[in-house]
Length: 200
Image (tube, rainbow, N blue to C red; front, side, top):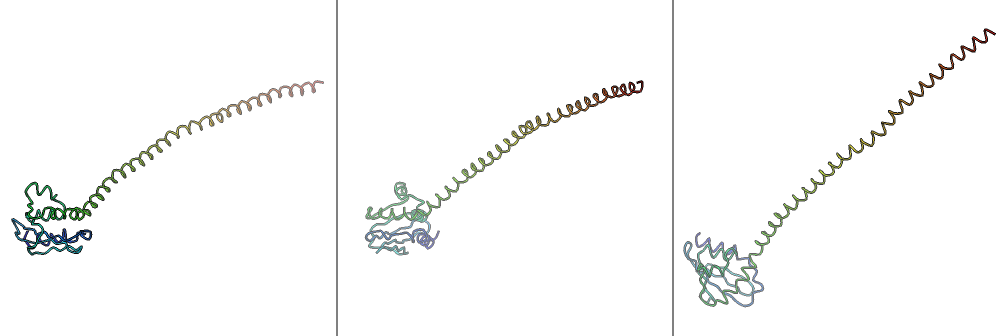
């Protein structure tokens, strides 16, 4: 990264940070080491933030770090305390003033956290939706199984109704046979009566 790219990236990552609640004046000079070596400053004055590619002689503190580390600090990807402890960041001057920018950096990276929360929420929704689909599928399967279980019961109930109808058929046949037998038994009587009347 060139010096110009580092300054442009610093403005992109931190230039829109909300400093309206910052009380007082703050001037921090950033000394870029390594690739893109140079100096720029960040100033908070009257609730406004300025990032410019110049040195600031009447600064409160000087922060020295590699260009990519400074960008990571501004974006919130690199924790300032960890960077200081590891030696990636050195601070000279008023440390308390230098530390006063930390809440602004913290608040500035909140939109990224919200995006992560939204992504996490969506990821969490997927298992919930899958579980809901599984529950619906299980409910459908249970209903289908219940219908299958009901079907034999209905057929079983219908079969006894048909059975009396079949049983009724032999009864009707028996009645017909009895009637025929009765008719046949009366025939000889009539014939006998006819014979008797002729004889007389």
